[in-house]
Length: 258
Image 1 (tube, helix red, strand yellow):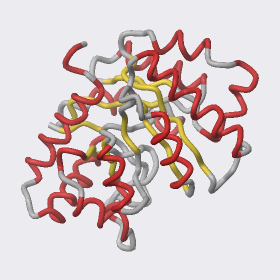
Image 2 (cartoon, one colour):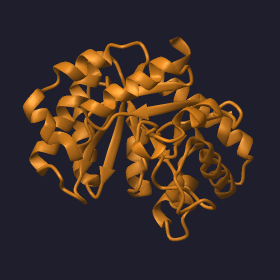
Image 3 (tube, helix red, strand yellow):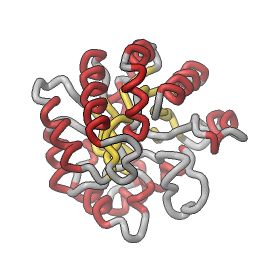
């Protein structure tokens, strides 16, 4: 069995067959899916899906693209959502300097605030980092000094050296379909260098579809292609990757204790 540690089942690209995709998870050997929010609306939808389906767990948070939203509403509503039983993380949160849809200072302000919320609620964080590697790392390093912060750097695209530093802080490294792409040098290096006990596998569906389905909508069942590719890189069995990344995710998100 696998776990898809990051999939946006609330995305409109699943509107036509969302129920069928979720109902087929067991058949396709997907034990659980973690569904992160990107803003308040999607966080609420994520929770609704988690409360409706046993195999879905929610994360709630505001993505850097929508950080401006928090300037208007603050964190009170997010905090209320985070108290719900099926919420296992704050996310996805972080920094995105590729699009800069929110000003960078606003992104950093609310990234820090949501990290503090996660620590208060004793929840891990799911981190989005695009073209903001150093700032993301420095914020996490600063706020992790008290030992109360844990999480995953999702769709990891930085260096092996930075991945090792995150691991030292107790973070997991999330790898998705990009690792199967021909020219994805850094994710392949990370997959080879970082021990399996520190890795999670994900789809980021409906985005970043792995080979051999690239160009199609991504979905939880395709997480096995990422796991299989990591197994090839490491020279171990796909079953070992599936089993250990499932256990890693259960540990991080405390699924066994719910």
